[in-house]
Amino acid sequence: MKKIKKPLLILLALFGLLSFAAFIFIQTLKPDYEGEKQLLNLSDEVSVYYDSYGIPHIYGENEEDAIRTLGYVHAQDRLWQMELLRRVASGGLSEVFGSKLLSTDKFFLSLGIDEASAKTIEQREPTNRTIRLTEAYLDGINQFIESGPTPVEFYLTGTEKEPFSLKDVYNSIGYMAFSFAMAQKTDPLLTEIKNKLGPEYLKDLEIDVDKNTEWIKNYKSVPEDSKEAQMVASISKALKNLPIPQLEG
Image 1 (tube, rainbow, N blue to C red):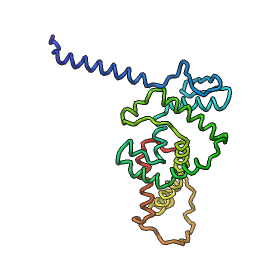
Image 2 (cartoon, rainbow, N blue to C red; image 1 turned 180 degrees about the vertical axis):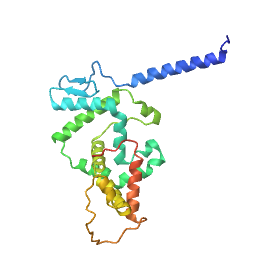
Image 3 (cartoon, rainbow, N blue to C red; image 1 turned 90 degrees about the vertical axis):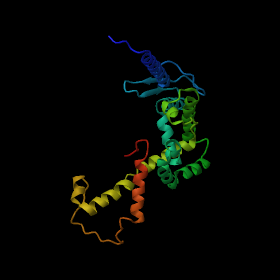
Image 4 (cartoon, rainbow, N blue to C red; image 1 turned 135 degrees about the horizontal axis):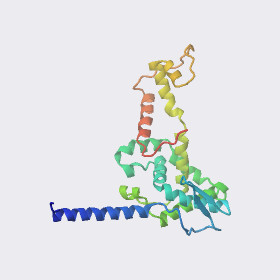
């Protein structure tokens, strides 16, 4: 029986220690679904029950307490996803992922979502019920950011945690509004399929098209290298590089 050499034993021991340390580190970053938490600004006790699917059910004496707690548990489970989502409309993805996301950032900045959010916030009424509940939700998120563990993705990318603001909420809603506008992405594709392959291909997609319809064109045909075609291509490219799933409906 051969003896294991001392350097190999040392390497195995180091590997074991590193693996154990990594396991402990990751365990400390996991969401906490049991016990009690002390949240500031609650007027009464709030209970959170997680079902077998991991979905939180929140029970509070009033809506504001429940929404504030929702912000905390939402951040506990999805802070990294929320971080990426708020960066889409404000053109901040390239700060995390580098130059390959520059075209995506430029595209979303060109939509003006970030500017529209700033103007909307300037005109808001602080006493508005929706604004008040949104600020309670943001307070819950920011309490987790301040006191909760940092998701491992922040360490891996060197991204600093920063508080969420009302503008982040409006930017996320603006991005969702764009992403739900499927026609901006599907109509150019369907038109190209019809023109190049014929309307029968659209019938296979269960799109009702009467092939006998005579279309009277009142515009010049668009060459493939036109500005319109380039715009459609740029939209597809920008969306393809998104590091989070698109919200589509």
